[in-house]
Image (cartoon, rainbow, N blue to C red; front, side, top):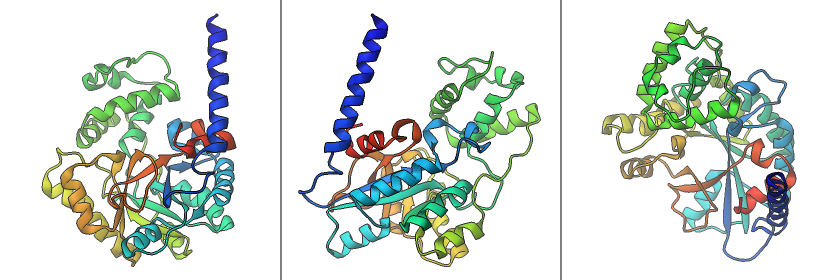
Length: 336
């Protein structure tokens, strides 16, 4: 009986996704102009060694991305995010259904796998770069933690009280990608600096090898910018989450300092911002409003001309929820 019920649920969900894909607002006209902002992170084929090291919710394959871009061209007017923001500010006409493609962090694979597709399809995109990690070997704490959790030797991890108290965490046996993703999500209760400090200690105890550079270098970022298809926005200096507990001076550095560094390296104005992990505070939004024309969150939804340009909504796209045309269409509908 349980198996029958699970099958019925899967069938009902598939039918609902098909309906959403065919009848969602991305397919229908009428109403005020709307902007869909899609949030991507990494683009990697399963044959790439980095694919198995990343959380499932962070990846689309090049085949999926290529297919999705072609579908977007049939549904929307694809524009750069800055064009929408500027048109709204100046009161210029807007497309009935517009879409902006964005990538968070500045991963090297964006240059290797996504950029060729953007050039082939001639569509614009925005890369939100973590300014002081570009061209370095610095790693994000989720990736550092995942490396330790995949290790065969986890003696030091067993002694880490801050990990041991997490619900469901265990040190025995191999952890699946989904289990590692769950641990990473639970660790978001801790401040970023605390996590980096603890991980540095654990890496030293485990004698972890130095990682390869994960993000683009400056020349790759410049190449994308010079194509005329890709604009660069700020994603802070070190990807610190901008909650209410950050000191004012550090908040200023992460928001304003990242823009200054990007503009110095790229030689062009940086007018867009992305909140790491989607975390905001009143002080952060005020500073972003002072230094940028527009900014994106991780809150899901569509944008209208009256949506605040400093808290634009997005729709996250990754293969485990959008790897077929029907599932992708259902995601665009906003119903899934």
